[in-house]
Length: 520
Image (cartoon, rainbow, N blue to C red; front, side, top):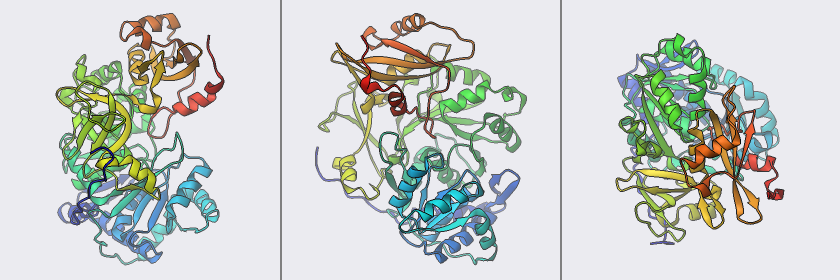
């Protein structure tokens, strides 16, 4: 019932993110667990290091319910932290290393960690941040941790699971203060179980982690790869050339990307110079993939299956998937984000939380055991987000008769022009179908007659020269005239993006002083 109490959550204590490590060490002990450059660890070695690092954390007070933050680039140390922190009974709280100093400080003040892990690159920043906190955490940098791991006795798994909180992932904060999303052991493992069949995961897989591990989109693959006892290949950051060479050298079978990464890979001259024949699954999310980009990817990597996923941090993170068999060019379903994965229930509702029929646009709402437990330290926002047991995503979309979800926008990004609702994502997809357009963001600008007008900001491919009129004609052939941009802006530099690949529209609006802009 709309406005009712949240449904009670059922805890399953046997489900734990650390059980995967114990099982892999037992069943696949001699097989590769982690590759980080020239460093390699078997599952038996990895489990030993995890148990020793957990002992180090416990000696510093990081026991049940305490938080352990990490500020680092991708590395074997980061993968070990993913397992060692819950092994110690504590809660992992990754910090976005790309944030500004005050933003990092705000996250640390909110999560109040007992220990702050840092790699060599970020150790100095970590110490500066700690000195500015009322309750400064212990700093454990990678060099000190390595020395302690050699002498620390391994400890037994703390045995946490079920509805115990395993991780605090902080949302990007692009439209306000970042919120800590509390995810449980069972939510993370059930998310892995929900997705691994469609992702064709198995113990022989070699998964490349080239996205930021402080983000749930990349972090979820740590849990699902470990669930199968596969091999983690981790890189400090995404670089198209390094990714191509690493894929070839390590025989990578699986990778997760965002469309901007795919564009960089396809444009890189090394793509055709290395053997990527072992690559089997390339999944993507965070932003729509234009059909021309999908077509180019299919042509350049014909043996690779494609899969799209949709979700958000609050959902651990996947809600829907569009499987490889639905990746058919010119199919209407290629515009969808797929169907709900197992154990996830999906509906479209109006502003009063009343379910809407097929084909009608409303808010995407999700419920199931993978939904977050709470927003850390924010009971009122938690109650609002989880009204009546449904996670209110803030995304607008509709379902077709077969349960395929079509996203149209973030509710907050919807443009109302002359009384008509215009969804910026729909306009962006139309513009991105033009072969000369590499990036596009659509925002609202004030208009004295219509209230708001559609404004498109585009980045063209090198040496491309389409005019504004040509792009408008292209749009009118694909979407209704009232949805087409009233103005088009051409940028020479790339659009600003968050670490997860999402375009920072708030930054685009601020840079144009939209609140003071009136067009005739």
